[in-house]
Length: 345
Ligand SMILES: [Zn+2]
Ligand SMILES: [Zn+2]
Image 1 (cartoon, helix red, strand yellow):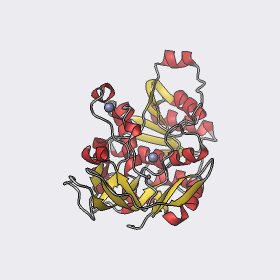
Image 2: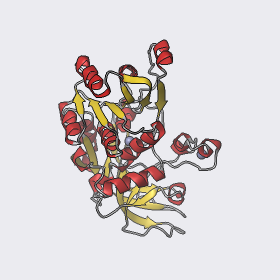
Image 3: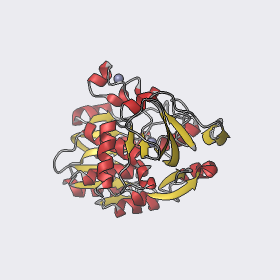
Image 4: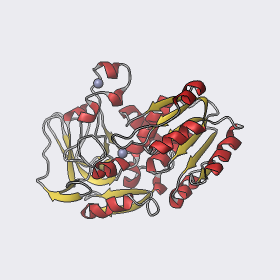
């Protein structure tokens, strides 16, 4: 079977290997679709210090069920989450599941960009394989993982009644975050984005203001207009660029929260006026990845039509053309979300 892997700096390549066989407690999944994530692009650029496994937003049909697995059957339409926490360590006991040391050590084999991939027993037994509702099509299913990350972040930040939220950077996950904040009752959700195509996607999703950040005056006046000059309750840095985090710090209200949500490049440094942070009481809070309960919740919101996501998928590219999918995903003017399709699509 074919699968995609990193092949040196800046290169992704299709390779061949035998189809994986599920061991006891495991399943294999025949790929229908898997989104290309910004973190996949970062891995390609060599800027992400984790294992170089590509593809973590996959949906497909159960191919083979290993011994002892009773809740899943061949042919089931599923989403498979690549990471699961241990639920036993001190980090998990405090509820910080995505920061559990076991969490990022778990993964799909050989990754989500594979005709067939194996889901380890830990993921299966901890309910990381979610059966898809009939109303959730393959492309939509491929957005569950990033939508789950947005929900986990919003829960971690808290969304007070009448909240004002500014999302800086409308990549696919920034768009999902902004739409989710709106769906969960934020009073005003604004966004900044350079790409016209992605600004359109923001406006289509019902955001209250979408501004080009190359005009800082326009951003400031949108925020001031919505908050009587106070600044937003929650500013979300949905790209990892330090300059974006700095803007977020400037646009949040006194006592407000800045969410470090986009993946920063390894080794990048933040240069902000610490006294301003201190005197204005700004909380800077990271959020990374998502958990099974939050994935189930966004799955419900998507199935019930409360979180519109389907229009965000602008390109479906077959696994055979994986390199093209990566090139497209790196061109914000041309693409919003790029989804790689597999044999079960
Ligand atoms: Zn992702
Ligand atoms: Zn743990």
